[in-house]
Amino acid sequence: QLWTLDSRHSVLLGFAEHAVHKESVVPGAATVCWALTAAQRSGRSDVAVEDVTLSQLLFLPAGSDVKVQLVMTAEPNDGSRLHVYAATEGSAANGFTLHSQALLRPARLASSPHYLNLALLRRQQRTRVERETIYQRLVQRGLEHGPSYQLLLHAEVGPGDALGALKPKRGAT
Image (cartoon, rainbow, N blue to C red):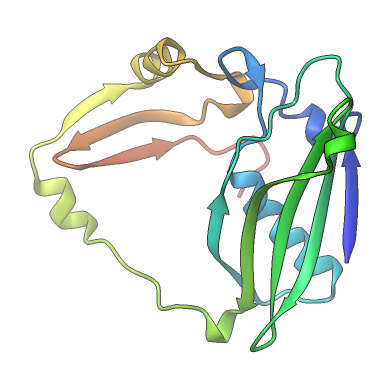
């Protein structure tokens, strides 16, 4: 199955404030969302998304026409794989470039989840970092998140890990 989006599609326009070095880029999490949406449109709702591979950033240059193709192919054991390809105007002669992919499997066949012991993590020495500091540090590294992408309230950083508190989006339950 094949779905095509172009740079005028509302989904891609929503990524305008998610930027790397001042250039809009599709968030990696979009691959997971697109995989779940593709599964639903294919009549499959009880799926797990696994083995997400982000092979290349998908930039959305201002003023350029970008075509994104979502291609779903069959995999063994009733699975499927979503491939995310894109081409910008001028590069279409070179064909579409693979940006990411994800494996969809029936939830009953999915890998066992790995659980973290949050109580143990919280007992370790942690440093609290407030949201303003987090987003300032990201901007210093060239990663800009507009207001709709600033969902972290704070993070508690420990040895080799971080726990974040998220604010729910309006209307979320």
